[in-house]
Image (tube, rainbow, N blue to C red; front, side, top):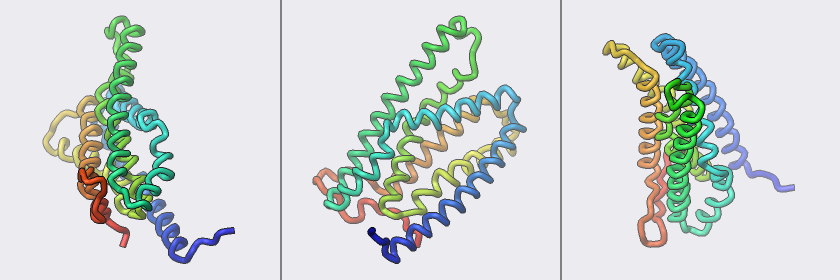
Length: 229
């Protein structure tokens, strides 16, 4: 039986402690922003928002088509062979798949709603999920970036954006809107979710600097993650 080295055991312990800590902290902030949302929205609008948010969380798994699980078996081989430019091509492939599948999902929802709600006259809450379609490719990409960061053993980048960044961004926007006395609607709340996923994905991409340099091979600094220390 293979035995892990002390370094591997130390890394796994750090990963477990950090994941547990950020999960608890992220749950706390998620709980807070849901309380704030429930007070700023009507019960129906809050229900519409949660329907759309749940739609994004579930749809991203469909968009990935198993790509997040394949990441752990595909990307390490590229990195071991020093062909890290394939990391970008792998991510780019699933980003394009994400856009295509998201459009298909949006079209399917509209068709189903049209056929079952008297020509969209009696709008069902699931239709509000259409506004969240734009978040799905970014949510899926953020998931892939997290798994890539885990492979590179960069735990900060892997866990903080989604676990803390997402609920904190939403909470911050809600506080700003409340201070400006802007009436919150379900559409605005869903738009905040879309912008949050886009912003987090752009930030993580900037930190990781994942791109195709056009030379068939990336430099050693091409995937410059922030390390746990």
